[in-house]
Image (cartoon, rainbow, N blue to C red):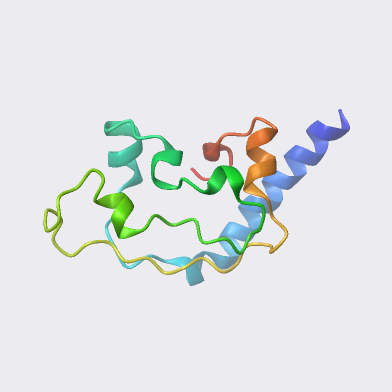
Length: 110
């Protein structure tokens, strides 16, 4: 019961901080998670491969261009995506711990 209440509280806190920092985290692109995840059925870890071992909120978990080129040909995408790095995470946040506890990426990232 205590774990459930803590989990719910944590989820609410994450949603609140997302809105608090949303203005600072806008990407400069038209990248579509819907196309990649839903339509192409690509798993989060296919592109964000270090998430399962990330134990610090300061870890850079964005895929590199080389990761994109695993599926896309060089020059296939005109004006490739550029992203502003997210810096608002708690430095002690562990993605690894949350995945080990059974949470899915979409629990927080929807």
